[in-house]
Image 1: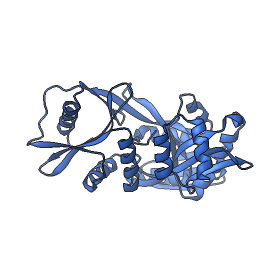
Image 2: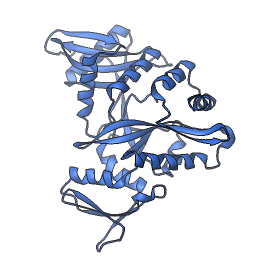
Image 3: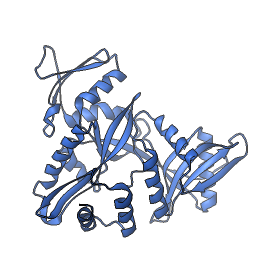
Image 4: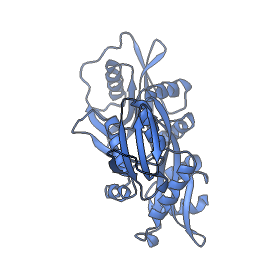
Length: 339
């Protein structure tokens, strides 16, 4: 199956041989793959990559849809829609609460919206230009690497966990990120003070000659500025393009990806637990996952589901509208997804 899916990937995407080899060596497995075949030929496939995600004070299981593609001869015939339906069923069986993806093309946002996804993952992009040096309160040391170091992962993991709605990276996943970083000739930069990391940035060059920071975490704003300035000096570049979680209500926020609720009761129970003051009745419809259809009652930190409508007013929502209502106010974020 691996070689058949790999052949379809090469047919559908323009990725380099090096990246494809990396993906199928480190990311792909038959366990996360789902495909539709015509005879012996794979005509559509996708991978459901597991990621934990912070959701308020809780951690939920998500499945990131990667490599979704259809053979050119079978497009516009409903094959991918059928494959996604099968994928949702498997996700639900595997205990996945939420699915996420990053559409490869702008027009795909509308396509995935028709299968229940909502565009809730956003990001902010800014240009960092060195000015006066910030102070870290001592002699800070700049280090860079693209090899795995335990203290680097532990610092990144701790800072990502502080974000209230953010896709997390396991230790094994971080190893894959570093392998891709080596392929793209990028680095993990750290700023160290008295033997401790106080700021970290994942930087990589782009085809336009600029350098991008795909992830940036720091103990203080001064430590962040000092690290970015040091990176500019070492790379001898006038500025850096920095991608970061969206700023609250900022008009410059850009849409990055989409989320689809797989298990409505699990998501609503977590949402209710995070907001015990919330009282809400929902009439939910889901055209792809029939198990989500029904009436949900949130009260005193609990969520009850009923197949029959109870007395009182209800907020009628589709599964996509529910994702928008719950997650958009939380400014969900994901980074380093090899997209």
